[in-house]
Length: 134
Image 1 (spheres, rainbow, N blue to C red):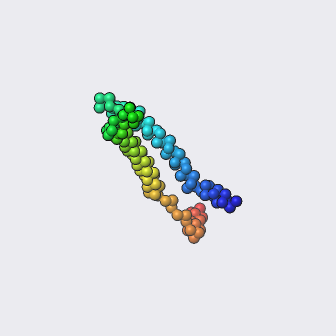
Image 2: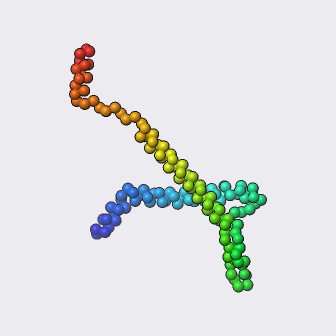
Image 3: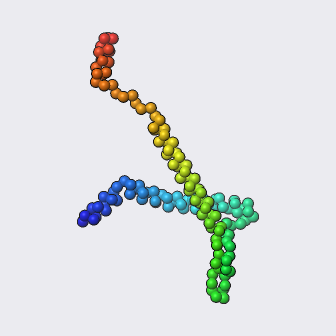
């Protein structure tokens, strides 16, 4: 029973929950970036390069042998280019997000602090001053 209790305490900590949310959102963000690269960015680049589909670019090291039922051995550098572009997009978005958060933290730090509340003596002196003005 104590293992279950320890596990429940571990899971209920804020850091674990935040990490789980980050992983789930990261996985969804990965799908969005993959779609952006494969379906939005790469088609115009392929059009500029005379219709070349980067995902199918490869260096064939050993051609396919249908008689022996052996698949071709190839280095798929086009898929690597797509993955590299995906990484650059993710890195740029993360950089912009971190920069935004840092700017918000700097603004909070630079915000003028409220003046300190008057001490009991100062408050008493202000009351006496106000009473004398009346």
